[in-house]
Length: 331
Image (tube, rainbow, N blue to C red):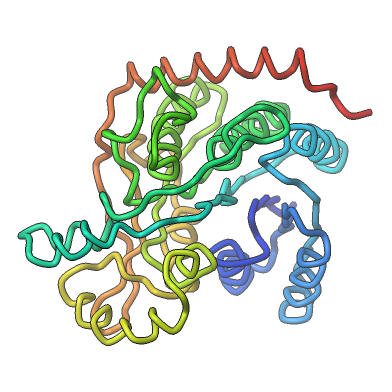
C-alpha cells in the first residue's frame, strides 16, 4: 500500500522542491499537494506526473490563513484517505519585511556577524494584519491554521502498523526573545515571523508529548537561507545577485546559506527516511550546504522548555474552542 504524504505550500519554494525530491527518491507514494492556488497546484501535479508516470499525485485547495478553508480541506481529506503517513506543515508567510539597515551595518563590524547573517536576528521587521477570522495573519498562517488542520486530521494520524509524522518548516530565526505567552499572536510586536516560528518549535514539542502514545510524532526543520519569494520580499532580485559573491564566500564559514529550494529541502527529505521514534523531540534539524555546494543535515538543540510548550498547546486548544463557536463548519 502506498504511503500518503500531504504537503502544504507545495506549489513554490522549498515545498515544490520537496515534492520533486520525494518522488525522485521514492515514487511509490501518493503525494497530495495542499495549495492555496488550485491552478498552480494542478500545474505542479501535471509536471510531477510527467516526470514520474508511476507516481500518484493529487491536489486539495486550502488557505491555512482562512479557518473555513482549513475545515473544508480537512473534511475532504478525511473522505479521501483512511490514513496519512506524513504531513509536511510547510506553508508560511513573511509579509512586508523591512530590513533594519542600521542593524545590518552594525552587525558587519561585530563578532556575531556570521550568526546574525545566518539567522537574520534583529535585522527584519514585518507589518502584520488581521484576517477575516480576527487573527493576526502571520500567526494564523504559520501556526494556528496548521494546528487546526492537524486537529481535524487526527482520525487519519497514528493508527496502523507504523507511526504518522508531522514535519514543520521552522527557521533559524525562531527567537525566544520574540515570543511571549502573553501575546501569542505577536499583535504588539514587530517580528511576527520569528515569533511564529518559535511557536512552531514549542507546538511540535507539545504535540510529541500528547501524540507519541497514539503513534504520532512531530519534528521541526529549517531549510536555511534560500532565494525564494520570501527573500525577494526583503531585497530586490538584482541586489541578491550583487550580493551573491559575498554569500558564496560566507558559506565557507556559515552552513545556513543553502540558497536554492533544492538544497533547502535536504533536511525535510532526510527526515522522511528516519524512524521517528529515534529522533529527539527537542532537536531542530537543519539543512546545510558547504562552501563547495555539498548538502548535509545538522542539528540544533532548541532553546525552549516543555512547560512553555504545554502552556502554548493549552492556549491553542482554548482558541480552537473559541473559533469553532464563531466559524461555521462547511457542509
